Image 1: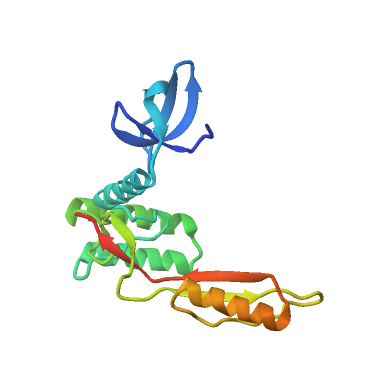
Image 2: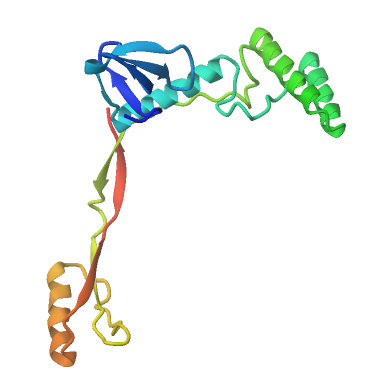
Length: 202
């Protein structure tokens, strides 16, 4: 198993990133970072898509609750009306103008710390809570599917004739028969298109 593979620890009931194996045990790292834990190699399996999505959303929410952006590289935004936020924001802007990257980083750290302590995280405009909602994809019964055939016979180039969109496979097949009778062409590329909708589960 490659390092970084997302697996599900059935005993701990959580998803982690596979790090390494040591005898009958493996080391897993929480999605989004954190303290590693040891798991029984026989108790892990590759995480399903839903488990991976859920773990990613949980990690993003944890970062947001800690006053961090879902993207740690995005600078925090000042809270309107807060003098401390404005002061730190001005300090950061001056550092940017002076091309002082170290001072910019210091200002961002202080701003995040202040917002965690005084505002419960980043500003309302900067803080985001993510929620994973499972959906099922189904064919849209209100829209008819389309079938189409293209003649790709020819020695130097494809014929290019097309049946045009049809509402049933039988219509496409009938067009193919007629076209073959007229041209003796035998090879076709067929396509099918439909409309799909997502239905929320639960």
